[in-house]
Amino acid sequence: MTASEGRRIQTVLKAFEIIEVLKELDSAPIRELDTHVDLSKGSLHTHLATLCESGFVTQDGDEYKLGLRFVMMGEYVRNHIPVYMAAKDEIDAFAEECGEYAHLIVEDDGHEIALYESRGDQAIATDYHIQLREDPQLLHNSSAGKAILASLPEYRVDEIIEQKGLQASTANTITDPDELKRTLETVREQGYAQNDEEEMRGIRAVGAPIRGPDGGVRGAVSVTAPTSRLSGDRFNEEIPAMVTRTANVIEINLATKDFNDRQ
Amino acid sequence: MTASEGRRIQTVLKAFEIIEVLKELDSAPIRELDTHVDLSKGSLHTHLATLCESGFVTQDGDEYKLGLRFVMMGEYVRNHIPVYMAAKDEIDAFAEECGEYAHLIVEDDGHEIALYESRGDQAIATDYHIQLREDPQLLHNSSAGKAILASLPEYRVDEIIEQKGLQASTANTITDPDELKRTLETVREQGYAQNDEEEMRGIRAVGAPIRGPDGGVRGAVSVTAPTSRLSGDRFNEEIPAMVTRTANVIEINLATKDFNDRQ
DNA sequence: ATGGGCGTTTGATATACCCAAATATTAAAC
DNA sequence: GTTTAATATTTGGGTATATCAAACGCCCAT
Image (cartoon, rainbow over all chains, first blue to last red):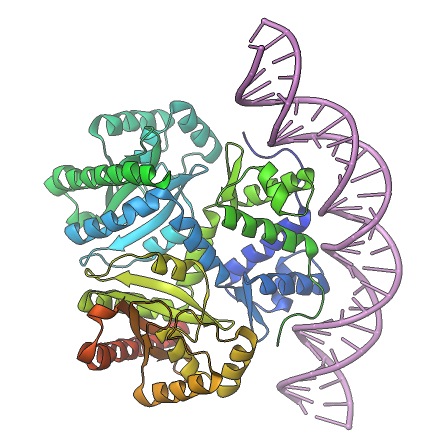
């Protein structure tokens, strides 16, 4: 299962490497890319011409940067994920109801990916939210991630722990496999997961899993807010009830939409 | 300027061709891709292994489909476009105020691309909106597109007309270059553009250009609604005033944020 | 004017992509 | 449980082509 065997297309990997470098640098002329990629200036130019023609890169003067094609492709991919279509409106309603950030999270290769985000009127934008949307994070230190892990078969959890590790983000992060598994057991009993400043200091969260008609987990909903606004009954009763209710509504949407899609 | 000269990396183009086919088919096993791409089954397999390893494609049983990496990349690209960051919240507020769909549109190679969309509570989802987000449309038959065209130097307008043509979408679509140019003149005088069922029957829209600190156009805001809800004074006075006001606020954000970004 | 820096083009060569065939794997049929 | 068919995956060898290095041309600064 660990994709590592077999051949790869070197040239395509090179192209993706250029894309990755362009992502790191935001924007760069050829002479700068030349110092980051092991390719001659001439070859780089041919690569960039190819990427530009395909719309994945755009040229602005002599600066190259990632193109809008990625936005379109991303939108396309997202619109074809059933759980996104089923969850979008509910997440909006939920964020408005509780006034905080609400997220739709899905798992991909042991990482968590923010598929959608809605901001309640009390929520304040932080770099944390941007980072969440742009880079895959690990599952063990977020409420949504733990909600997903708790719904995955045990062998998958072991696989993920072994492959990705349990890196600490704050002093509260769970880094011991056994402790994590005990926590996941609690999550299964409660039906929701909490994150008490385990990913970022001063930030708490509550998340609940979204299951498909077949019982398999499709993602998770979560609310994120400063600890000052997420404590006491609100952290332990009120918000957990709202999160699980929202997750349940999404599950119903998913079941009925699933039915419709088969036409 | 018409990128066509010079060499291209054939192998990378092949990889993008596979991605495009995967987009058309939604999801397909190798045997099906084999009938759509001029490549042997074996080579296809190596290509797909490469794409999977990079996260742009995921394998689900023996079906391949586009991967979540596109979502992350799209989000990244979008978050690094100044006009998006300057407009997002304003579009949300605007959609809520008028109750209809509000869009942020930018131009890319003569096409219009929906960078952001916000839905007011009266707005009803249609396939039109999904299509708008997933596929680049032409500029001449939408309000935002005409607002952008009206703000572009004339030689660019001529270029775009020549390259892309003025394809008719409905009976109301402007297909005559001279008529289009007269309309653009009106748009410049008014400061906003209207779309009277020119893109889709039963749908009207109003759009206004967003200009950067240097005077160049960075995109456009638009509202889209059924003709029944967009007529009379609302179509000719009320909404145009709101759209241009929103565009102006975004322009101010853009100017100040631009200043901040330079640190 | 002139020089240097940098993007772009070009020709030759070796790399690695591609095809075809062989092997492994899966699923179904009897 | 065995056989068969259909498909995925691997492998080796020929050849297209991605790569490099060098030359060209452009723009700006001095």
